Every structure is written in structure tokens, then in C-alpha cells.
Length: 503
Length: 89
Image (cartoon, rainbow over all chains, first blue to last red):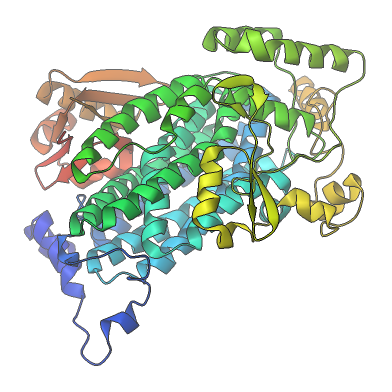
């Protein structure tokens, strides 16, 4: 179809012709054989024609707009590399947030690309298939543009050289990896609920907007540009996520309890996963945009609140344990940074104690918790480091069987007590960080008993050897003294000082 | 009552789109943060093609919004003449 003809049709007609009219009724194969995964989760679809993409985007326009986004994006990448953009960042500590991003988030984009390609094949409705196809291509674009954006920094800084290898092996990267693999090994409707709705609609703002505003505020033009370019696709994904949930709920009342259980599960899993974003915002950005607690209030409590009010009419209640996330917002970033600080020899980025000025900012943003609980801890760590006794923990932590985060998060009703739950299944005892994670296990124990837990694997001798140096160096490929340890005295700090002197 | 919102990249297009939104939605609240403009309103926000075209001084396709948009909150309804965000509750 040439552009002139398509111009004469209005958006609604064009959408009908370019989606519905591309489908056909099977005549010599059974529907169940063509779409074998559509029914096994118990979701009942009575009429796929009710599915509507509110953007009414068709493939011809999709390519047109995506090409424009790419042109704008790559022009900026060129400008950044041609103008020594790596020297414009606020402080070399900032780059550690980028290292965390490429190792933890970019591989999730690739998994999302595979996930949408797979589930798009499984739906009988043409509108759903086309929406999944576009999203799959979007996610591949995000993977590629993120790698391109960060490849410039990889020429100058450590920790980014082996991200796909690290994603499959490093202890803290098992948190995002296991999150996504949990979704990818679920049925197609649970995958959409997990990724399109809970992650894209409810939580993705908390990942991208603070990260990108933070990048803009810290002089990292590559990241802010790919981030906003990716997010322009996310706005479409979010809308799709909301439409999917409404569509499934409207199709049959039996779908309501199934979807509710998925929402409870995936909000909790997403909340735990985003601990690393909280830590990035509060501790890793030298120039800070907003605190994690403020972001959680704005994007979860306010935006999510409006959303769950909208879903009440379908018989959906706010996710179970949502109240615990509201209590946790004043604690999670501090506790997460403390975990990474003490295991800073096993991270592909540098860690540090916040400066006096940064601690004052944290006191102001966390009046109920920082001075009481976390400042004394960081001041002690700073004192020890000043005496030449920088604290590294050589004991391996107990991990949660579901979210895989070390059991170093406190009880919702007692912030001086670590939260620890356990259960016995088939004669084995399993450990959890929270009621939320234990509930998820109880619902599908056969799935989570198979979890690849980094600490268990090290202790079983499956990670390169018996001592931590072998695990970190040979198995993870984190170069000792180059990629890891405290920022103070690091190779990164020395190089930065030398470059700045040369300018 | 709930808030709908749209976040746009802070760029040349967005400046005019935000101006158009302000004209068609006098109650809308505009918030600036680094590299990003967020516009919020109670329950409903409409972006009209005609107003945006007048501000931009050129033809504008409502789907072009996708190039500058970063995030949204609310249900979406889009056709050739307008882009609407709304909550039913």
C-alpha cells in the first residue's frame, strides 16, 4: 500500500484492514492444535475481536515512527562519541549506575524480545499477535541501542566488558535473571500479566524515568537518549498492558481470581527486583533527582492507586502486600546498598560510603529512618575504611528461594529484625525473605525448588572452585582490583584524575 | 477522581504540544524535571490535532506523539483528530 492510499483511510479503518483482515479461519487443522498454549492456564477467551489496540498502530506506521526514533538516537550517539562525552559526566562514580544497567537490565530487554516472539505465536487473536510482534521488535531495538550507547563508555571504563556472561553467572544478576525466567517459563497469559501489566504498566516508570532523569542530571547524554527513546515504546507497551488486563477480565468471570493471583505475585516480585533501582537512585547518582521513597509514592502509590481503583469494577483488589511496599520504601535502598557495599569484592562495579553531604541529603529524604538506623552504620564503615580496614564480608549469605536476594531485609513491623521465613517441601527446608515470596513458592513449589541459587551453587563447587577469588575472577570474570572494590583507591578513580589533569 | 498524566521529552516538539494541551485543558498542571515535561489532570486530558498543528505551524499526525512521548497514565483513546487519556473510575 502506498502512503497516499493509506492517507485516505482513517486510522480505525486502516487498523482493521492491517490487523483483522490479515487473519483467517483455519479449515483443516483444529484451533487447539494451532494454539496449544491458549487454554492450559485456565483463562477463558470468548471473543478475540474485542481486543483493540488503542493506538491503532499498524506495521507500516510502526516502521515509519521507529525509523525516525532511531535516526534521532544515533545522531546523538555520534555527537557524544565525537565530543568525548565520557568526560562530561558529573563524577566517575556515576558510571557505576551504567555498569549496573548494562549487566542487569539490558539482558532483560533481550529476554523480553524472546518472550514476546514466543507468546505472540500462542494467541488466536490477530490484534494480540500483531501487538506482541511490535513489542518483540521494540525489545530487540532496546537491547541493541543500549549496547551501542554503552559501548562508548566501555572503551574507557571497567565492568561492562562481559555483560551477557555475567548475567548468567554473577550472584546479584541472578535476581533479574530469575525474575524474567520465571515469567518466560509461565503460560502466555501469565507472561503478559507479569511483563506487560505488572512490569511495564505498574513498575517500568520507576525503572526508566528516575534512571534517565538521573542520567540527564549527571551529564550522561547517551543513557538519557536511549532511555527516552526506549521509553517512547514503553508508553505503547504500558497501554497494551492495561488493555490486556481489561480484555482478559472482561472475557470471563472465571479469569478474575487467576489474574488476581498473578497480580499479587508479580507486583511483589517486581518490587523486590526494583530494590537495585532504589539503591541506584539514593546512593549511586552523585547528582540526585528524587529519592526512591518519593519515586515510589509518585509512581506506585499515586499512579498505581488510580489504576487499581479503575480495576475495582472488575472485582480486582490492590495487590496483596502492597502495604508492605509502602513501609519498605523508607528502608529498601539503604539495606540494598549495604549488601552491595559489604560484598563489594564480588561486584562488577565500585561501591563506597556516601559522603557527609550525601548523608545529609539522605537524612532529609528519610527523616524517620536514616539517622536512626543507617547513618550510624555508614559512619562506622567510613571510620573503619579510614583506618585501612575497609569492611568486606567473606561469609556467603542465605538467599531467598524465590527472589534470590540475600536475607538482609527487615520485617515490615520491626525495622531492627531481619525478615526470614521458611517452609518444608518434600522433606527439604526452603528459606524466604518475606511472606510475599513464601506465598509465591507455596503456589508452585515444583517450579521454585529448581531455582539456581548462586550461593548454593558456589557451595556445591559448581562455580569455578572453592575459594572466592576463583569464583569472582575465573567464573564471573570480574577482574580483581580493576572492576570491583571500593571506589576510593580504584583504577577508575586514578584514571579519571589523570584524564582530568591532561585536559 | 484520579490523575491522568503524560510525560514528554523536553524538546522542540514537546514545547508546542504542551502549549496546545494547556489551551485545550485549562485545568492541566505542567511539571518540569530534568529532560522531561509531565502534564497531569483530573480524570481526563485531550490532545487535539488542530490545536497542535496551529502551534507547530505544520501538519501533525496524532501518532507522531509516539516519537516524543515517554510515559502515560490512564486509558488511551486515539483517532485521527485527537489523543485522549482518561480514567473511568
